[in-house]
Image (tube, rainbow, N blue to C red):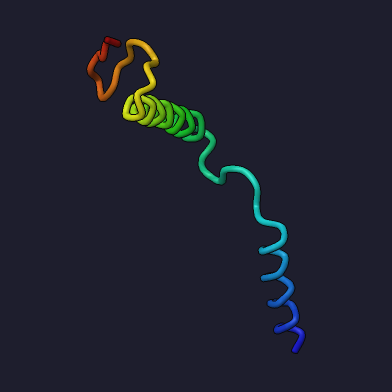
Length: 68
């Protein structure tokens, strides 16, 4: 019975108080975060271009795209 109660409390605590932060190696964090930020920027530029918003000359997929 005590083991069951402990298990229930552990599950509830995990649901109510999830772990915070990134649990990866310290050396890998800055480059992975930077790559995600760069990719997010590329996706944002492409989305804006598809919807007709001109953001000026940019590089999309490695190709310089000039505004018309």
